[in-house]
Figure (tube, rainbow, N blue to C red):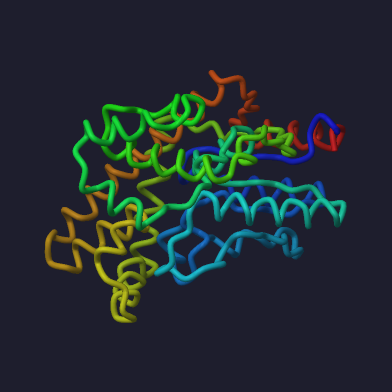
Length: 305
């Protein structure tokens, strides 16, 4: 296996990841796989920042994957993304093109190198309903009935995690082959977009104002008019959550915009914390600060791929 077989582009929201990914894809004959947990949904365009116009560089369309692949009423979980990413990755590689995974969803990025088998075990609704009736102490006793290897990582002080631990252990007892070591076939070259805190806040504020002017509130209103309830909107990201509250009459417009802006600032900070954690765990991220860095990086990538 070559040292690298794909490129991963990460960075804070509003950092310009898509533009960089498209530039690199254009130069290296690559195709982009989105690693954004919200861009998978159709009809969520402005709030998720799909920026589909950026997927054309010098008149050439850049192929992209995992965008607009399911309805917003559906739930798209980590195991769904892992399955679809692997499928797209193999198809791109078979065309002798370079897979470029671009996005800021930490769990998705972690799954490229970490063991994610347990997270992919689906919920057992019937079992969960029964376990939910038990007290924490009863759940702890129930958990102890399983072999130690199946429960060694369970947080026994959290009822929610006890239930999930029992759910996973029950599945593994019936599917012992699931415990075999998972082989990862991703060998990513990581590129990070390095933006100062001041510049990051400036870009977030500008982008939010631009989205509001371009119909973000109307997009959410349209979703509601087509039958989407406010409860579902709460789970589709900050923009949809806060605008839903505004449209439901629970916040004034100025208050909504101010709180949304602050929440996006905080989200970007959490993203950067996640990337620093990846570095502490041994992931080498090549950080780009400007156009000069990007051009140098592209030259290096052409030597590697």
